[in-house]
Length: 392
Image (tube, rainbow, N blue to C red):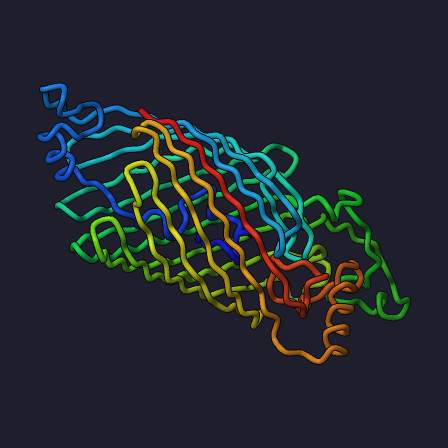
């Protein structure tokens, strides 16, 4: 899932539930050509064969619902909630979506193992183009704007395509996010005076008298984060109601400024880059008209040399095409690289010291989402998601 199992914290965390997950957009789709066939037989939304009249597909529709996610392991225990409303406009071979949602208690990280939560509003706009039967091209943009406590801002863009060559299909999505926010855990004062030598070029007077001066440096608590995900998926429909999914997920994140004192100690490394590769083998089956089941196993590794092995299972209940309820559980076991116990203790100690301003430096744990207490240890990550939706 989005980018998610191991990356959900960042957004991991980020990310799977607030935006479309890497697997979700590539499920079976209905294009206008198929809708016309259903319309002729009375199966299109808004009509039935028993009514005796074929209705045209609905031009305007809406969906209201609620997303929720609980996670623990890679990140501290957290639960975020997201009510949302979407409006759909369908015309010929185009579909437009306009929506807005409110997110509470979404986790953000300092890039050094500390976490806080932020509340934000998320408007979005999306469209899909169906140039030919079995082909879909999609694009979506979301803008996250947080409350004044963290000044959270995010530009979130997604694009992709879906090709249905029954009995096989191929899909691809790419997501890019540019994130800025103010992290408060380091705040002591708005400005901090640091004793320094006089700035060069030094005069003879400076050198002889060992002249010192105080210089004010504005705290650099604002985090600049860029991340992207690439997710191709191949599906083979063994039978009409059951398909096998083979997917790959590449995740890359870049913290431009995870440390305070960036201006004061320019010789320090002021960026962190982390990436991960994840593969998935899954199966999806519509067991009956009102229930479908998805399950899969995942495996991958990250630039911190951790190996992730896990899976996910999701059940979806559809109530007469007007309401749905889904729940998913995704456990992942993070396997630490082999390391001498004494060396692990030393690295953990050094990372703790890096929390003190006077000893800032490149964090030895290169995964900016991992807590300090987990360095060099193997541990479980658990994610539970729920969705309730009503549509017309």
